[in-house]
Image (tube, rainbow, N blue to C red):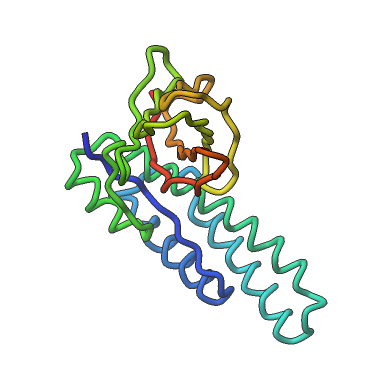
Length: 202
């Protein structure tokens, strides 16, 4: 079933990142839509102000102040990720169109996920809670399949290789989105990782 995935797309430029963070904080201040953000909006705003001051120091003092700025940016990023997960939880309880509208008002981005990716790579709920069954298009020659999963789409964890085009990954935390990808090796050629798919684990 199609569902909404809440996405945080942080710009590389620090000024643009601060602008996005402020926009999200302002959006989440609408208590009629977001009654209890994981991070209280004043706390998020205070962290953004601290980041702004650190960025101003870099512009004034030079790259010697960059480490402090980068640490404060990472702190704001962590708070935004908590807010993203909060909006995701709200969206999971809504019909698709209502969830899309909610995300549009949150300042985050949204994409639809059906548990399928281009090329036939797919995921479905495993037999046990916290497990996911993954299946990739099967090759016609002897093939080794490698699998990875991630809780944030950035840091990837290896799962055991298989000689068949499917596997089950267990031990995941129910109630969270996970990213999955695979690649395969045929005739000594290691192919690129697939486009990841995002799946809500129950």
